[in-house]
Length: 277
Image (tube, rainbow, N blue to C red; front, side, top):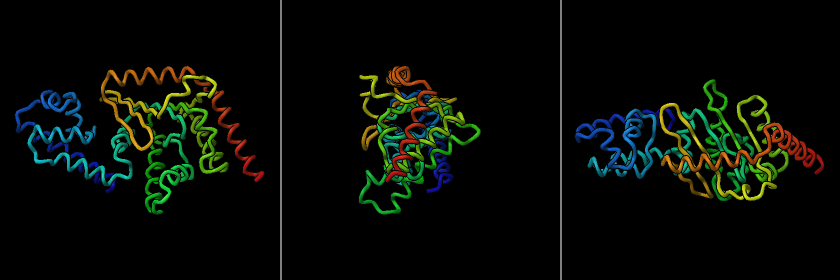
């Protein structure tokens, strides 16, 4: 489904939600309380700004007695998305975020991957997939990076564990090009990138990636991901804990300039390694 058609469907979702809510005689706050989100979130759903997760859509169906129409709509959009079901909502939120902060413990974040790097990590986890599947995943991942090129791009911070820099995904040439791309993003001030060295000890053992997103018109969110699963977090208390954990990671990193030097030096090493083989 094209992105424009998806947006049309979300707008329909919001209009229908408002209609059914008002027919039931419920305020946004009242319905929010019934389905365990804030009234403000219901308003964002109705405006098509925020996309509800599947479990929220199921609860809305139950309390508004809609026969499952909201659940079916969300499932349809998830099924036609090129992203994993647990990442679909995150990709949507990236496009409206004003600030994105990431921690990548093992793999370069998707927003900074080159097509060759994205292909290497996709094939590594889908060794028996058809070529069409691989191309769709790579195209979707690389396409997300367009938000860093726009005039209204978000403020983007990335903390890379040293392992993500020194693990040669795709081979030396692919890694060299990827690290050079990251350096370019930093030099052009489209991203602020720092490296968490292995030597910092306990900080280096935080498991899973972490993404924090802030917005103009809605509360911040956190997204935590491990292999083949991810959790989008809206709870303000948990989001605050995630923000604190990220702050503690960031103060343990190398300075931006030292990090950039390490990244560019690693890229040169990969180039030399490739030329000597």
